[in-house]
Amino acid sequence: MYGLKYMQKEKKVKLLILTQKVDIDDPVLGFFVRWVREFAKHCEKITVICLQKGEYDLPGHVRVLSLGKEEGVSRLRYIIRFYRYLWNERKNYDTVFVHMNQEYVLLGGLIWKCLGKKIALWRNHYAGGLFTRIAMMLSDHVFCTSKYSFTARSKKTTLMPVGIDTVTFTSTGEERHAYRQVGAKNSILFLSRIAPSKNVHMFIEALGLLKKQGVLFSANIYGNALPKDTQYLERLKARTKELGLEHVVHMQSGVPNQKTPEIYNTHEIFVNTSPSGMYDKTIFEAMACEGLVLTSNINLKGSIDNMFLFRENDGEDLARQLVKLLALSPEEKKKLRERLRAFVLSHHSLSLLGDKLGERLAS
Image (cartoon, rainbow, N blue to C red; front, side, top):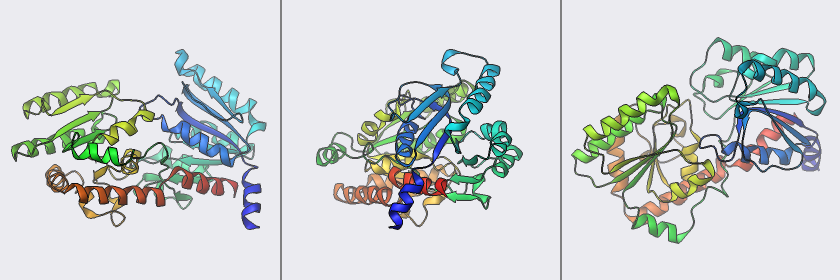
């Protein structure tokens, strides 16, 4: 009886979502289309306002409105469209969910308060300041996945599952395990936006230490750099050559998020060097694909085996842990991969996120 009442209550939610991009082909934000699809199961109606839209396939009760970045409109037009949508759609939503971009709360928070709308802010980043505090103050709910996120300090904050689509992100079975044991043996993957905050340089230095020790390996780095980080990318390429890694470390462009499961599945080990306040989804996508992971993210301490953790900002420790993982037998690797996927299924699946978020927004 309780479950039926809960479902009936939850279905009444009419949600306005504010996000940066709705595009299944985007290397970084493509996952959000799947998020909206999952949220739609818990809502009567969803209106999405995004800065830019591309390709997507969403249920009929989801409407996507763009501020026009794909059309090349000015920032002033963005703001005009934002307020027009906010007002014109006011009868189509009772709750606002702002994904990552606190600016939307700063721009619309007081209006939403006057209209009697609930405001929920999802922001997961170690950095923050006065504007973040104001956005949190205006919000009724604050969500993040990392207890080291700047937003985790608020009493309004609820820690949430990371939200991995474990149907899309999965191993393809025994034949994939066989590939990892033979074709992809000692292969290492780094998949991220290329930026100083992602500590790509530390990963390259760790690989340099492996080469000095005579460890055989191959590595791929997938990701694009924003215009402001192009010099950083060039320095990474130069350092790769200085360390004599150009024949074993390959820099690749970013790929659509929906195509990354194949990449995870063709590498033995996935490395993430981001600060703990970020809690990158890629860590869990790799786990869901039964990849072995190495991360310095202390959110995971006590949840996964210590062999998958290295000290934050310590390239030497990363190299040591890589050597240990590479030395494991195929049988040991297989057991560990299965345990990592089970962890994601139990604690960080998209269905768990949808249930928990639906419950909180309906309360």
